[in-house]
Image 1 (cartoon, rainbow, N blue to C red):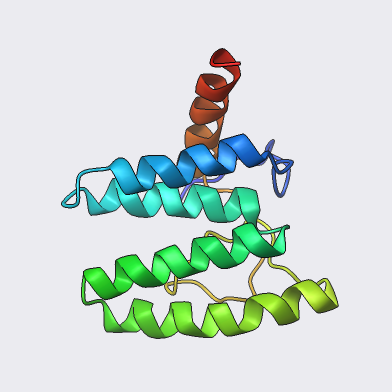
Image 2 (tube, rainbow, N blue to C red):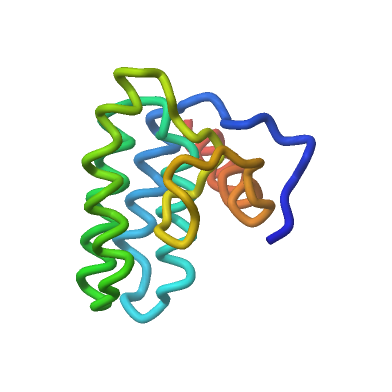
Length: 130
C-alpha cells in the first residue's frame, strides 16, 4: 500500500477527531465494509498513543470482525486487546500501524496514504464545526 513519507509517524491525538471517526464508522452502511475498516484504521492510528482510545478501537475492530464472521481478524483483535495495556506500560507501541490482523501487531510503519487523507479530511470537517 502506498504511504506518505512526509507524514509524521502518528498525528497528535485530538479527542473530537477520534470521536468523529468512531461515529462515522457506526453510521456507515453495514455493507460498506471497506469504508468501515478504513475509519477504524484511521481511529487506531490517531488513538494508539492513548490507552482508552486504543482499547476502544480494538474492541470495535473485534466487534466488526465478529459481525463479519472473520475468524482470523477476531483472533488478531483478541490478541491486540491483550497486548494494548502491555504496550502502553512498556512504551512499545507500533506507531503508524493500522491495527488489523493482516499486519504484525509489533510493526511500526509510515501511515498509509488513504488513512492520512481520511484523517485530514475529517480533521477539516471537525475544525469547520467549531
